[in-house]
Structures are given as C-alpha cells and as structure tokens.
Length: 337
Image 1 (cartoon, rainbow, N blue to C red):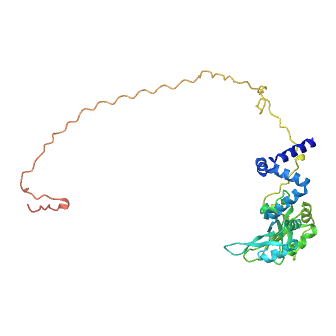
Image 2: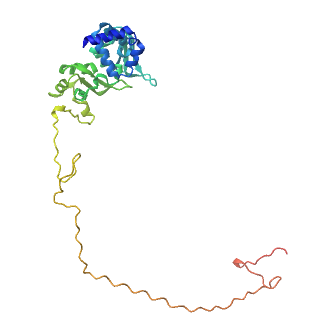
C-alpha cells in the first residue's frame, strides 16, 4: 500500500501538474478549517521543515504574542506594567488603557512580546503582583474572560467582606496564600478616591483551596473579623454544582394507560370510559308552565276638541292712537320718517 502511494506521488511529481501551487490551492480551498489543521499538524510532526515553517508564520502573527492583562490598580502606569512582564522577554509594545473622557485607568492593559516564546513563558506564570494587586494575563485573542472562564470558577472565587480601610491588597493576598495558590485577588478600591470599599475578592487555582479558606474558625485581618464566602452566593445566586454525566441516571416515567404516547400507537383502551358516551335523556318536567299574560285592552278613542277660529286683525295705516309700550313700560321711539 505504501509503495502504491509513493509511486503515485512520483508520477504526480514527474508530470508537474499536481505539484503546482495553483492546483494545490484548488484542492485545499474546499476543506474545512479543522481538516486543514489536522493535515498541517500531521505533516509538521512528520517533516521538521514543515514544522519550522508553521512556527515561523505563527511567531510573526501578533495573535500569539499579544497578552491581555486585567486586574490592574487604578494608579498603575504603562512603565510599571512593562517592567513586571519584561522578565519573560523583549517587549515590542505595552500600555495601560485609559478612559478617553476621564483620563483615568480602566484597570487593564496589553503586552505584545517580540517573540512568541516570551508570551508562552509569561502564560506559564499568569498571575503577577503589580502595585499591590494581583493581575492576571491571558492571550488577547481569548477575550476579556481568558483562562478564568472555567466551569469551576464559581467554586474558586471568594468574597471577602468586612475589611478594615487599612488592609491593602498585598496584606489580603499574603493572608489567604496559606490555604493554596492564588490565581487572582485584590481589595476593591473606589475609582475616584482610590480608597478601600471594605471588601475584596480572592480566586484560587483549585476548588480545594477555596473550600479550605472557608472552613475553620472566624478569621480576622487588621483587628476586624472578616466574612469569607463564595462570590456568587454574595450576589444572591446560589451556586449549583454540576454533576458528571455518569452520575445522572435516566428514569423511565410510567405513562397512564389510555393516553397517547409519542412514537407509539394507541392500542390500550381508556380505563373505565367508553367513547362516545351516551347521555341519558331527561324526563319530562312535571312543572306546569305559567299562564300567558292577557293582552292589554286598547285605549278608547278620544273625540276631537273644537277650537275657535283665529281671525287676523290688521292695524290701520299711520301712527297708532296710543303710544306702544316696550319692555319695562318704556315707550318705543320711531326714527324720523
């Protein structure tokens, strides 16, 4: 079989028809992305030259070298951000993002390394303490959520309440680091005044560490007793643990005979009922109907009433002998004739 493949490849190479880029592109163009990825991965594992070509193209693309850094303090500058990530390699570009309207930091920034290997080195240690706050990085192409968008995040993120105004993010991180490795955490500060809001958040890398931090006696920092609970519980939403698929056993729900079941013919008769049902006729009513009311008598005819004839009386021409009186016994006044 392998000899047959080699012979076909040699024939194609001798003809020079299928070896041209134009023909190869026409063959690869209809393929899906997953098919092309599998093909290149298989060829790269078999031929070192192809693997080097793939790595060179990937390294030149900023998508593999640009990191998104979130959880920055409001007073963190671009210089401080670059200094924290410079230990992994040469930085091509780095900046904190500011609000255009207010000129204040938005709490995140970007780092673009010159080489892809430097970005991979930074991702192996994504959490960094910068200006007293634990910042976290991930590839910028993964979006704002990044690596923290995992199904067990609600079980790893804790709400810390009742903090003293003197407690800093560094003090908070040092206190809770005893229970396990911390992925992200800081005290919540007011964006305008940069003062503590009296609470903070801690995100552990494992669920076991977060459960260990919640167990035990009451905890206190800076002379105050603090509240430690799951962050989603603080928002008023109970945390629902996801059961594995193997633990969910499907149960068959019995169907009452006589009712239609999807995908099955209705062969069972309805229990206790026969359709159509006969309705018993009602017996004739023994009550007599009320007598009809008699028709009203007609009104008697009224005789016509005679009226005296009205004779129109005309006034003689000229001025009347008596002065006509108007309203209020005032005489009429005639205009000059």
